[in-house]
Amino acid sequence: MWVLAVASQKGGVGKTTTTVNLAARLALAGQRVLVVDLEPQAQAGTALGVNFAANGPDVAHSLGWLMQSTLQGVSEPEVLPHVQDVTHLLEQFEGAGSLGVLASLEHTMTRAQEMFVTAPKEHMAILRQLLSTAASAYDIAVIDTPPAVSSLNMVGLLAADAVITLVNPEYATVKGARVLRSAVQSLANSEAQRG
Image 1: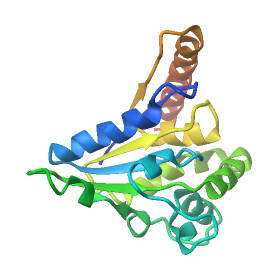
Image 2: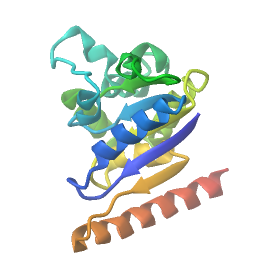
Image 3: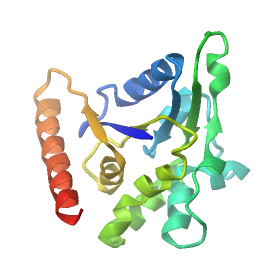
C-alpha cells in the first residue's frame, strides 16, 4: 500500500477537503483507498459520513483508541476491524473501487497525542506499522494530518511515502510550508541513517 500524507502547519488551508476529495477521486478511478483521519477534530471521517459518539460503542473503533491500545500493548496492531467502509458513496459510479475510513474521535486522539509526547522514539512509527496490516486490502492510504508540527503530525509523516503540503498565498502558510519541508527532510534523514 502506498501512503500519502496531506499536511500543513497552518489550519484552514483545505487539508481535509483535499484529503477527502483526492481519496474519493482515486477510488472513482478504481483504486482501493483508505482515508486515515489523524486529525483530532475528526473532520475527514465526518465528511465521509462517519460520526462516532463520544461515549458510544464505536469509541473502540477510533484510530486514537487503536493507537493507544497498541502503544500500551493491550491489543494486537490490526487496522481492518477498525475501518468503516463507505464504498456505498461510490455506488452510482461505474468502475469505482472501494473507500474506507479509519476514523478519529477527539478525546481518544488527544489522549494518543499526549502518549506520543512521552513515548520512546521508535513508537512514532506506529501508524506505519498499523497501516501495513491493511496492505492487502488497500492500494492507497491518504492521511489527513493535524495542522501543526506536533507529535501526531510526525506520526503521520513517518507513515507516509510522500507528503503533499497546501499553501495559501499568505506569509504564514508559506512559512509553515518551509517548516514542514524541514521536518520532512529531517525525518527522511533520520530514517536513512537507521535503515
